[in-house]
Image: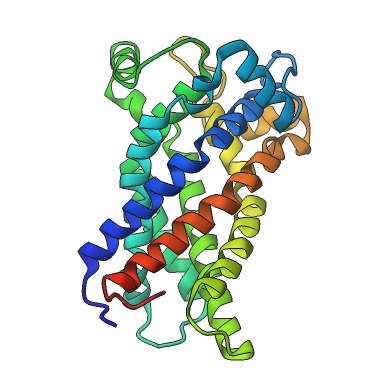
Length: 285
């Protein structure tokens, strides 16, 4: 197995991420709606993932669950291509050891996740905006509205929480997946393959949901603000208002759909990526 195909490795990461993003997008839309619920003076309508799905379907139709899909796939093709594709180069830059420490894995994930989040922020913002809105807005129409009302910088609204989330998410994701795989191979003699990849993906999904839900909620609320309807001045302001008005539990609104999404998303993304690497003669993680 070769490890000298960095560009191909990144492209394969993008392909795997687009497959995962497209498959799990409806759950992500429900998660965004639940995270917006209770914001400011808005009343709770959705309450849980099942009721939310039913209301969205009844009031807006099946297509509403796929709002923002084009932005989501574009985001995965940029953000995830970079955050997964750059993980191993950053890890090798930090340490040349074969069995690297958990800290090294986490640091490499933080660096690759931050890079991906910064580049893909406009796509992330557009995805959240389109998922939050009722009615039919195209991606091009929404881009035009943002540029007209908020300027180019409007596409970078929510960069701070998005960057923080990207760093925490990718650091947790890659460190958990990589370390769990290393641990199972060393202590339980697991061999590289689907079973090992599946177990590691499940563990990774649970850890991601626990660590990133609060920052994901803050990111969603800041990014979904339209021009003239600004409630939050920044990351800490949003966190303070949310805590004051809704309590600590508010930061885990949308946790169940997030977990339901992260499980299948990670299984599809990581396994497809690993299998494509094998097919192309690239060493597994």
